[in-house]
Image 1: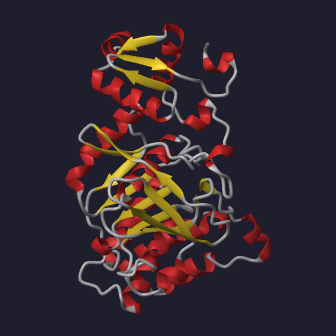
Image 2 (image 1 turned 90 degrees about the vertical axis):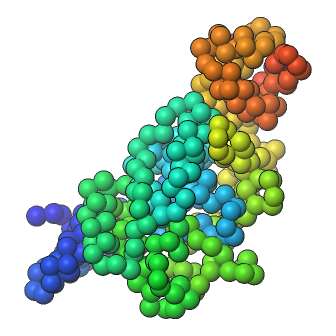
Image 3 (image 1 turned 180 degrees about the vertical axis):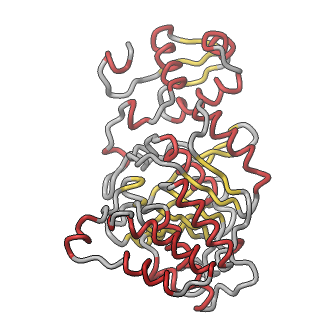
Length: 356
């Protein structure tokens, strides 16, 4: 028999399967396993940072804002970093599997994945894409998905988007919205304490998430996502239930391959309340890939190189070298003076760490 410490996670999946089978007396056993005294409650795993200062485990979160502002690119970027256990914008993450519900725009995801892998010079790991508009107000679909989630036990579940996962229901009414939130909560629990991140549109005034206000009360985290033209994507935390809201972040969304990818932002290295100039520039905070770092070290040693020479040195396509050099240019580490690429400065790290 499962211990009470795990009962809440396993109970959610058991609840769904028994509901589907007709409920009745066995449901009482499930409910009994969900009763905890104070000592047992203290043993329940506490929420931890999934992405420090932004998202927590065992929580419900929403990215909200107008359509076409970069919410999906941000969610995919965070998913890839969580799956691989990589720092996101200088912030530590808790590594774990990710389930990404692709309910719309699935045809663009191959290019998005390739763009991310090209920019980061590594494969996307431990991210599972559920390529179907899962309907959260369909009891049978929710029950089946809960069983899948209980098997995978993801650290993060992304729902992209809310409206495509409640087709035929009015998001301005209390009943469908409270049922949707209940389904998201069951997913959070069935995963053993996942962060469930839902992508949603804002109202016409741009002041709140669109629809019935139940989201405001249910959410542990609300993050408004906006973008002006081709400028950076702005993340503004409008609710953070158990932590400081922190300062807004502005993250570039740049061309890579046949798609776009989130790159390094000026505020990315800062915890709440710091300014962009406060963060020390180290290899870690710069967030360079191994290829980007190796190119920089080579240019520091050799003075200048052509793109074709760098491609030959590292055995990479010119396109990949160009993308890596563009990152170094934006970081202020190299400059282009056609046909040359030259180093300009170095982060404040010791010679041994820098490889010089």
